Image (cartoon, rainbow, N blue to C red; front, side, top):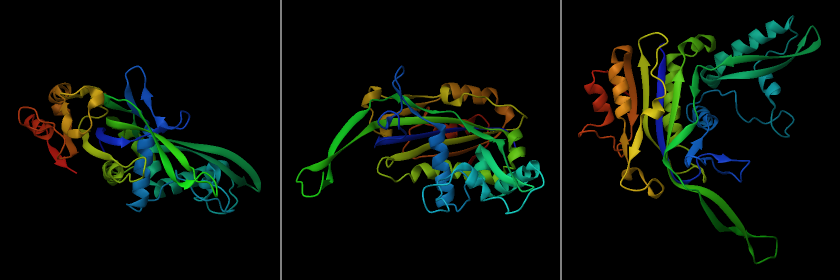
Length: 317
């Protein structure tokens, strides 16, 4: 496995990509730049949910009913799902078995790592500890390429405010009319050795990024569309360009806050192109997926054709 970087662009229309529970669940906003922020935790949740629900993968970090039937498991109880019911001789023995079982079973820990608490019997005495695994796949927070403005929507509910009343309940929500969001990530081949992440896991990761976003079909999340996904795989050990999300921008005839759909923007990537050209001998291949409606044309060539014109091999995923 080689070092690689990920650039992922998706947009959202009339919805909330990532609400802040400490601020009335409003979309997260950088007030200085007026850009929309989406946490890496939100993207990882999207990937986890897709891999579990659509790809049939076992996921460690998820909500699971407590065995008592009341409430949810805590992290220590969740970890015990992967330990045999026996009296271990040492805490290190229990840690090693837990680590091996989880890494063999749970794709999200192989990808993103985890801190796993442990509460187990050692020679009939309860001992506690934890395992920390650094994930080979890391993302920065996503940021919109356009300035955004939050809209406050009010409406009425379907039911009365209480039994027998004629007045219906009110509902309110906060949405973004339009946000084109860029995520930057990296895959560390050295950390992959520790979590036993495989090339097949990376294929599933990319599938989860693209199709997980496409399948966010809930009331607050519906309206998100993946637009561009690049995985730049390098041939030189420990090398990467870095900061890919800051090497692109968008162009539009409209002011940022008046943009309402993908047809009103064009991707600009002169700086990315320059960096790819400069380092093309260190790139083994660029894997990609692109939405047909996304305008990335540069002198009648789209971004993939431009990359290929630099002499860099590409492959659609």
